[in-house]
Length: 123
Image (cartoon, rainbow, N blue to C red; front, side, top):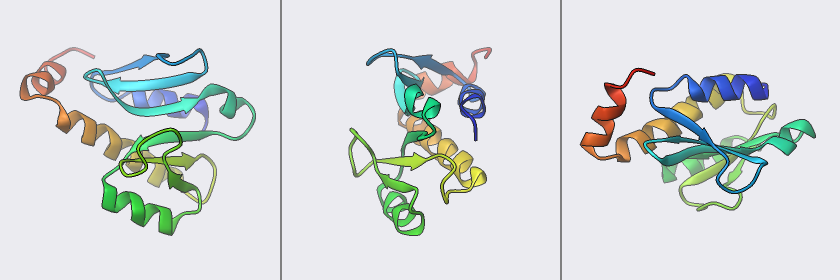
């Protein structure tokens, strides 16, 4: 997966916005004002690309056991976030599923009104 693939895939989701709230390097994708994915642009440029994604705690542990490219979230809650190394033993199909899972967890945590606003908004 390239940075363009990652970027386009995240932005293809309903109600997603991009931000740089921490610095010029850390790209953050949000839905309803809440983060669901973030990544360091300089790591993509240096060939060490990784993405932090929210994850159900039990699934997070299972993924860490299954893939060496999945570790507890860097600078994040180790219970609810994983860091997934791009172009590791994690297949692109699985990476897309993990992006979807992260998005869905965050989207579903929004208020009913917040979810409805996103679903009825032109994107």
